[in-house]
Image (cartoon, rainbow over all chains, first blue to last red; front, top):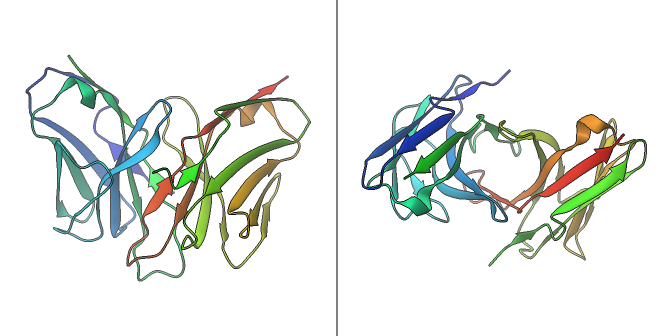
Length: 116
Length: 113
């Protein structure tokens, strides 16, 4: 079974802090994604990566950056946390464009981040 | 602009009856659709998918129907069970070099025992 592990289930930080959310997958997936989930808004894509050191902006990248130094690890960085970044953050991974057909994404269990 | 819409935020169904969850989309370039199920405090799990070249895909109690002319898909669960109570998300993709999905806002299904 695919395992996507997010480093923290719950995190509380203060405004202005630099926050790191870590995600590791064990299935050698090329693609990795960061979403946030908010009530009434569903899952919104922040950033994704289709290869090591490659990244692309999703729909709501403002205030975030990412890092992918190794294939299995994808980090989301809140450069200067603000209260409107309080949310559930979900990491996902999938096989890449070279695989046969579309591939579903496999999700971690999420990090509930509160910014005070 | 919401390209994938789930207009019903919640749905309640009696155990044993059929649950029908609906999803509408606006982008005619979408060629692959998925349904995910999400329990509280867990990440979404993949349930079933359908390619745009098909109009139906079935997996056990779950069937997804695609109506391309109406830009509409639906998930049927028969018979519904209390363990099906969860939030269901539909997602769509248009291949552009990588598999990037756009998710709907979700429908919370409650199956009553």
